[in-house]
Image (cartoon, rainbow, N blue to C red; front, top):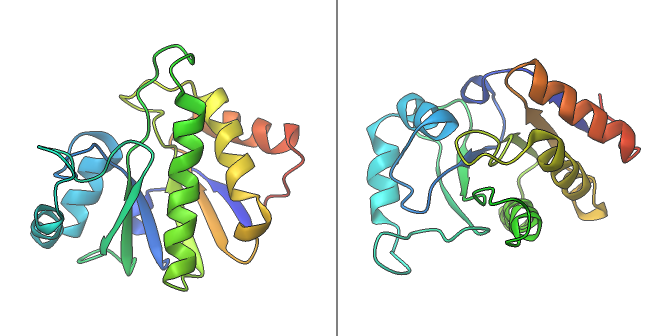
Length: 175
């Protein structure tokens, strides 16, 4: 089941929410900052404890990492780093798709049943919502994701419209 909602991801009682993070995993603006604030200081400590792949990078673009949910209603947070939009010719669609695939792989590995995604990269990273929505819906509707209950949290009418239009265009059934 796939739902497209205009809702605050930090309020959802699901197995895991997805954090559209930056490579440091130490908090930032937008949904990342909101998740860090709602989860409480335990999240920052858990993120600091994750090993750096290279100086300042705990999660490279396109990959994902798992932490507890701390003060959130969600049991876990799956952090993923979406690409910064550079016009679409720098591999952004493949990197964005990789975010979803890595999150879904972590969900399978941990036997999670319900996930909530924000509109990854659509905020300060500048990814056009219409293009990001097509990637998101294509990935979450893959056969390996069908057993999951997936909520796509789209803040604001423009992003909601983009995701709903992408679902229609790709013939993805939503609730």
